[in-house]
Length: 161
Image 1 (cartoon, rainbow, N blue to C red):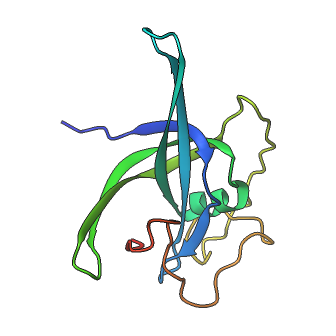
Image 2 (cartoon, helix red, strand yellow):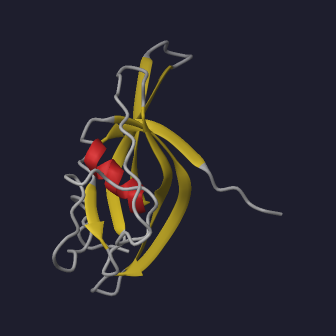
């Protein structure tokens, strides 16, 4: 029996997408999403609200497109899977976290409009083998090995992958 590990969330980016490249040239982007939930307390009739925060990682063309298209505050719909990473810090402490590995990212059209631009196709000899290209002026491969991924404040002691 196959297990389904699919999650969809709608929220606002808490930080700019951070685009990095693995040593083999694979693009990866990370960003945070805040998901707000509000309800009326049945006993007090007061309006209540809570916010949940999620880290999102995406790969390949999706990573490059997200880094080009999204910014802090953007309202998005993310569909993907939950992944747990575990590692040990330099001090020997064991750490783990659950993050969303995105399969699809889309702008929320509830309070905004967007103009979609389809990317050009890449030739078979494209540098990373992807079938779609970023517009040439937006696509730049880093000259040197990438810096490790930073997940923002509070996560500096985490391994990037």
